[in-house]
Image (cartoon, rainbow, N blue to C red; front, top):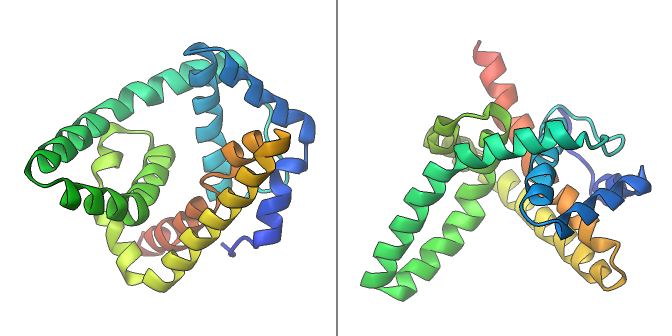
Amino acid sequence: METIGFIDALKYPFNRPKRLLYALWMLVPVIGWLALFGYFVRIANEFIEGKYEELPQLHFTDDLTFGFSMFLKSLPFYIVYIALITCITMLDEDIANILGLLLGFFVFPVLNVNFYRKQTVGSYFDFGKLGYVMDNIGDYIVTMLKQYAISIIFLVLSIVLIGIPALYVTSMIFAANFYSRFIEEQVEQVL
């Protein structure tokens, strides 16, 4: 798997610009959000598979069902995370803030993509995947810096509204590419 270029990532949401209108489902509480979550997980899996040609089509009922299922599967992880951060905050708020930043940069992107790929409750707790981050720390930092840069660009474009859906569909593009190159590819070589 090759590394996706920054320009290719910027162009990705605009390959089928009409499909950016799917983001309007954000305006429909719960049902729209769950459908978009299912759709987003499908997009992340396409990134992992190296499919960057165009945005896939939204299949509302399928994506809604899938998004609801993925939401339920993610609850145990987020309950544990919230309990952990709450306990640490009670002890020392500064340490909780630092831990939150470190987890947000080094842990969550990989565990999120792993969860989107494997779609099991246990995949969110597969901390062994973090070893690939440490083994490829330079590439990972560059990946995350690219991810933040594209997010900032699309946040600026949110002023003209087009950046909101573009940000949504590309929010994991580089993390998924990293996962594909360093985790999935190495696991396949072992098998």
